Length: 432
Image (cartoon, rainbow, N blue to C red; front, side, top):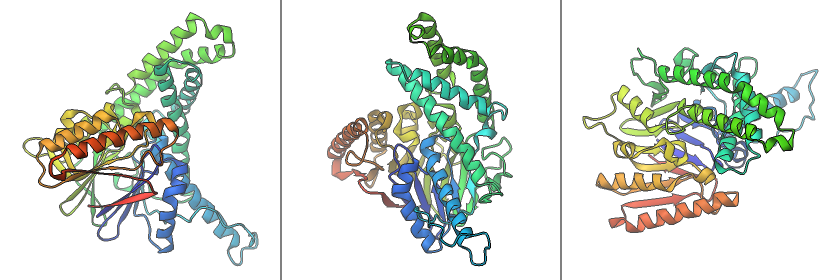
């Protein structure tokens, strides 16, 4: 088994290749990064008549799903082109231009928990409107915390339509890609009576660690509670937003403060957003090799899923070959207990400095815990970005801090026990 990790903007995009040639695409990163760094590799697979056995979308955030949508859009563009230039098509256009994007591989299956299936279907569009409205208003503030909330809302507002478009693209009327087939075409999750069996993708064994059904039910309730509590508030802000004088008034300040407070309630697990908490997380095994794919999930959910599958030892610990560090190395998603419970030979960080991810404290905690386990061989930190390629300048500056920290950790490690790699090209390969 090997892992190909792509430069993917602020998001995730990885390709798992099994010993038997099975291929699983893990998220798609940002659309622009997908086109620049991922599409050429996938196009080369298509040229060799190699398919993707599975596309796994961890959750609906834009930095994970927009690249997948771009890939599906490219596939549709090529299908339209093929139809237009097909010999004998009386309504075709032989001069139809060849799509600029490389032709993606055939996709045999997709695992994706669609947004409409995670919330009350009648509320999905209203939630999208709510997020867009609040992001628009909050973005006008100079308060750092309110601006951070605005960015989160805007990201969700952008990702929800993309998630819906993915659902349309894979439907029978377009690409006809089977969705969540091993789960009865329903949400991919851990159900109470789940026998904890692995799903086979060729020689790869895939175990769903999260989300749990009860957690999705809770998140659904929180989405809808948040909507009902804030709909009138956002509508009031929207009306007042056109009047600069009113924007200076205490009433709007109070309303924005209430909106921010309500937003923090969403998820309520170290301020992790609801879609992140609903991340589809997997343990991939081939023989005695283990790769842990965590999306943007929370460490407690990872451990809960591993326990469900009986993968923790008597001390409640597991060692894996590769850990894709959750949520770009954000401190809200990981704690010291997790760093000690789940150790790895290779830690993969997907993040380009956006929102100061990977966070320095997370890197320190992982290295401290791994060194405390007294590894018999070196372990390595892999980053899918670097200060050489990160943009804009704020991201570049943070990646420089990450590089400085990592260099000090490597230098401080005895006998070259800590190694590192920062990506400056389109991808790197990690043999498992």
